Image (cartoon, rainbow, N blue to C red; front, side):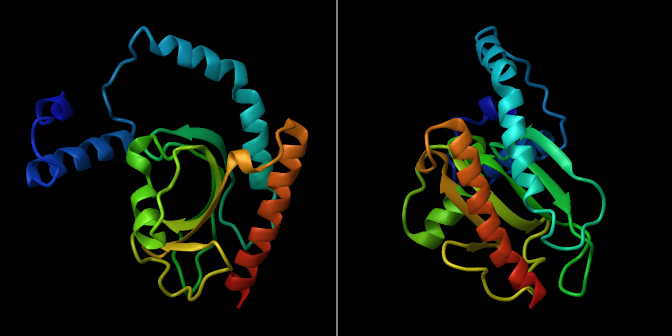
Length: 204
């Protein structure tokens, strides 16, 4: 309702920015009061039919990260995050001298055309290239606060980005083999390689 009421305001106006930030906050904390349209049932039906296979994939991706670093607490297994446009799993790392207990590793599938793009604009600004709307697999080491990882210096390797101070890498889902089993194994191999680079950086 607030979003609709301010839709005629320019994107650069402070009032519009405040409304967008407030809506984002509500969504992040599960307080948004939007209810589904009838047409949304088709999307839910499709999601229910396929969610188990995607959950198997994303949970398998998280399991590849088991030896990354000392963890604190259990894994939050695959779930949809509408505020990010992701279907992902994450786990918090044990705090150390370079970062606090709000630091986590996350992996899953990212849809850049959802949730106002999540990291999309930041990546485009940094890389100078547009991010396609196609689904991506991703791996990130992040913290809920900007610049909280600034004491972790460098990048793990080619393709890794620093967004605020977070570490982020992604690859198009379609770039992996089309056969589901081969695709999963290829995604796991990609994650193994990138996780090893991230582990080496954290161990330095």
